[in-house]
Image 1 (cartoon, rainbow, N blue to C red):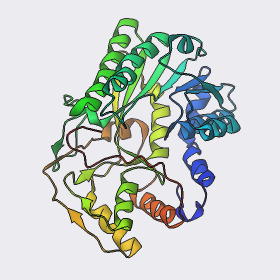
Image 2 (cartoon, rainbow, N blue to C red; image 1 turned 30 degrees about the vertical axis):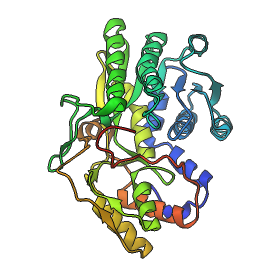
Image 3 (tube, rainbow, N blue to C red; image 1 turned 90 degrees about the horizontal axis):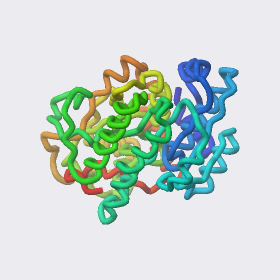
Image 4 (cartoon, rainbow, N blue to C red; image 1 turned 60 degrees about the vertical axis):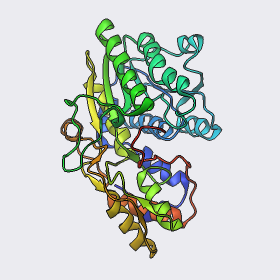
Length: 344
């Protein structure tokens, strides 16, 4: 599914990320109308929109795909429109703008805030708690697939397979607490209005331009020490995550379903760093040692319902290596996977 050597430009990368799987096309054929992606700018939104547009076309369906965002990047808007999506510039926190969005039977909810949370906590809480309530009321009759994060879980023993959807949340820090707030607000609206929702606890999406794999690779290339305090993590190819998110619409229910979106492996920071050091022929330095706990999610339930990811960690590592060697553009948004106090 992924040939790293065949990807030489950003458009090549986005085409691969946007290529729908057969299961995506099958779902598109069953859609009852239009789809709207809220918070469609940023890292994952543009390729999700393009994936859904392509799936609908291949299915021979007639639904449109709307993409609403502030679109701080003109590039994102242009790419969405070129692919056939309908881009709408909107501040979703603005009640008038939200009310003017088109009615759609299916909603992909991606809006949220993580980076820069420390120092502007009130905006983080507004985006992650106030806005979900507004959206859930606006689209109370729709199916909603809502992105959340594995950060709502506490750090767990690294010998475990990670937190499951049945485990109690234990968010560390204001960002994670606000994300649990988002889930609770969505749950409240779902229970009150009967809105069908599927909450997706993502941990972590990766591709060539951002993600934990890129973070570790850049440290190795720069000769900087790789922190081992949080020594294990989950990763899932962004294309696999977006496909699963789209198809999770059919698992939306009231009260909300919850699914962990995470790769099948518990990845070692040490192993990943050693892989890149060997690939780049670079010396390797570490700082600290592995703690007994880490932020880990067990994604087996989502895999049972939606199938296993199609792209391996090794393939993404090779893509990241080639991308860095070619000087490819990155988003410069480090995941800060090493943070243990929840301050992002």
